[in-house]
Amino acid sequence: MNQTMRRLLSGSAAIAAAAAIGGFMAPVTAQESADAKFLMQAIQDNMAEVKIGDFTKEHATSEDAKDFGKMLANDHAKALQKHASVAREKGITVPTEVTAEQKATFDKLSKLSGAQFDRELGEAMVTDHQKAIAAYQKEAMTGTDKDIVELAQDTLPTLKEHLEHAQKLAAGGEIRTSQRPDSSGAPHRVE
Image 1 (cartoon, rainbow, N blue to C red):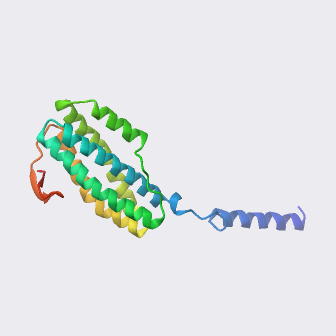
Image 2 (tube, helix red, strand yellow):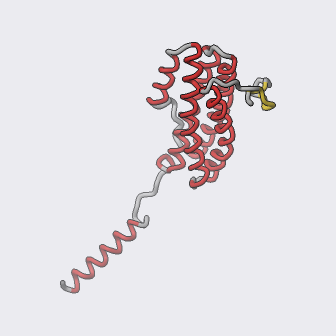
Image 3 (cartoon, rainbow, N blue to C red):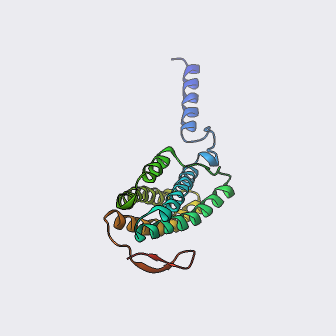
């Protein structure tokens, strides 16, 4: 190999190495970052939980399920406002619709009634909140945007509380009253 070819190849290797470590890569926009993707999914999750909560408080049979629906609707409405506000501040598009999977869950639940509705609501909310907690924990530990990380950390205790309620509802257990009032001033029913 002649001298000119070696220089070209070594120059190409340097360019490739620089590109691989980010030297020539296009910057990630706010909309494409992992933090933004987490936030957009979290907004959709909150929208879905508000919709399910509103439906539950009107259509559930048991008082426990109705109270759980109120808690879901109230807590997730507050979270939705906070999440959307942070997204707007960051220049991230705020989703306006739930995912197809979330819509399918709502559609399935809306066709049920009585004890079957209460139990399957609990089961669906266990699954949803387990997924949400995993995503929020990941964001809290690995996120790079300080504001979004703090939002994830601040939201985790409420999600864990919802999971506990959902597990009891799915098992047919009673959800007893705690001292934490909801937005109306009435206490949430927890054990």
